Amino acid sequence: MDVLTLSRLQFAFTIGFHYIFPVLSVGLGLLLVVMEALYLKTRLPLYHAMTRFWVKVFGLVFALGVATGIVMEFQFGTNWSAYSRYVGDVFGSALAAEGIFAFFLESGFLAILLFGWNKVGPKLHFFSTVMVALGAHFSAIWIVVANSWQQTPAGHHIVGTGTAMRAEIVDFWEMVLNPSSLDRVWHVFMGCWQAGAFFVISVSAWYLLRKRHHEFARVSMKIALVVAVIASMLQLVSGHSSAQNVAEFQPAKLAAFEGHYATDAPADMYLFGWVDESSGVVHGLKLPGMLSFLVHGDAGAPVTGLQSFPPELRPPVNIVFQAYHLMVAIGLLLIAISCLGLLFWWRKTLFDRRRFLWLLVASVLLPQVANQVGWITAEVGRQPYTVYGLLKTSESLSQVVTRGQVMISIIAFGLIYVMLFVLFIYLLNEKIQAGPDEQVEPERHRA
Image 1 (cartoon, rainbow, N blue to C red):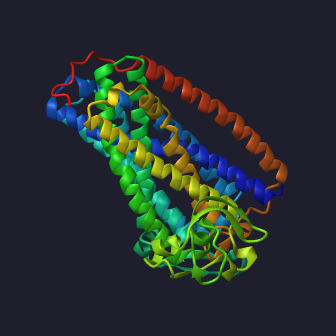
Image 2 (cartoon, rainbow, N blue to C red):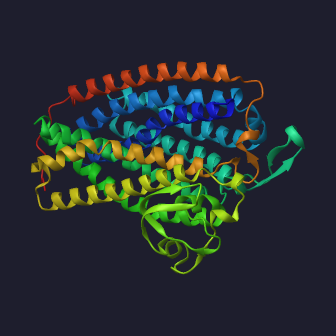
């Protein structure tokens, strides 16, 4: 493989590993606010024990997120210096805002959240929990804004020529509120809330199956299940809105979603399939005209196909097709699981269905996989550009980095990340096995 391919694989690997942790930080942050608010309202020891337990898990997740995120930023200067020069003015402002308004807020109150239980009052501790959760959400906002600008650039002009060419901001808020920002921010938020909710559901189901911390697990699952249902349903809405945005501003990506090659013809929606990129034929089960209907409200409306673009300006179709359909399939499965859990709760049989509880234990993986393939859909679908329509990926690479250097760094990072992940799983298992610190009263007014 050449330097470009290796550098892309390195960035994909490092950001994919890193992205495991921020989504959990955002999702768990929301749940911590709900749990501690319930403690302040009821003063039940149950909610206090619950919050303290999940705060410990949050601290572990936060630490891994910070450690793995630093590597990404260094790659901009090592492997992608031409890209960094081009987008530096835009990214510099967005990442500075992330540092000032998000990371400092989150980390500034983190010490109180983790260690302030017996040092500050309950209301101040709750305020710290809210600030940490807001910081995690603000961090996601600014990162997504920066990435969204790559998808739908706005609020800038281009200065310089040749290798000195770069984008400069002319309207900060137009850059921030570029055409895809709001859709993508909400889509990411819902994915984070799902990840946090199903993580709590999974651990709670495990406790119930092992007949440990019974009341703790019941209430934790109920809280997380409500969040899971809301996030899963809203994810369907935000996904539809995001796809309509892609149809307007990135038509080649939308065509790759469904392997739609024909120019200005109605487009089908595939439930599953395989794209033969050499012939432009998709083999699979489809709903005729459904993509046209979802995008335009008319099953006969034309949708721009891949044949409208030169082959060199088309994304790798089959990768995008498979990642997109896996993301959608998992999203629908999460809706089904969460709504089924809500139905069993209403029927008062949720905690007695062992097979369903085992499904809930395994469900922790689904939001993570969906988030990963969602990013693959967005980023590979943008190819061959790093900044859509402006800067190609092949033009973004550093000229001084060699193939051997990238290969060595991939191996080194791979070994380090394997060790970090093993350490994370070990420490997480220790915390789960230990369970909540306090003995709690039975839940009052249990449904």
